[in-house]
Length: 305
Picture (cartoon, rainbow, N blue to C red):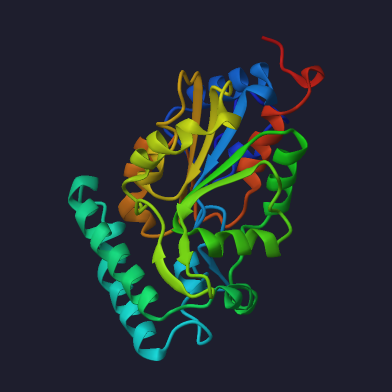
């Protein structure tokens, strides 16, 4: 049986769902309340993309990540596709292995991403075909995504999407879903195309699941639009995502929400220890939307202190 929340009767009933786990319910409630008192003008949202803003699975089938979307007959040949899948089968179990430390995983993630990117470069992918590959893919944002993106833009809250995926594909996914609003900022692995529109490299420093702290310190900290917003709502599906807010200077309140999509029994304890709120096998944005709605609600709706 699910327990009831104590501070928000009728305000955030979604926190009482059976799929919601919290290590310290009082701290979560206090943080949400403090953020709401500060208002939308002091808030920023930092989110991972693949398997966080996108679904993990739909109707029993895995939903493709931005890298997986590139596994398309228009873009790569069968041999390349086979090699990329073999790499996934080798390295993905390592990425989600609860028995290994992030330090152990880090060099192996670099190996994985580097090999995949090298294979993609060899395929001389054409830029103008990306939109069609996304359109023909089974990429899906989580149920309730439009409410999430629209609420943020209406309240003028910046959304920093911090992704170890492929930025060009990510942009196309949100563009085709009509939610690439002006308040959306993206840090990711971007393709470098030559003058004829053929992929020749990937730009800048490689971003993978376990080096987001470096990216946060070097990129996110320099984004002027995020300055003066010390309250952070952070969404991720990997323990590596917890470092995405490390570039926020003088933060006051950080609330972390973790989507536990896979290997629930093995990883549940670790996720509950690490994230403030854990959503178990939840393919929707229902809980983040409810929290966001409360935080950005008008002063008239504030609870009594």
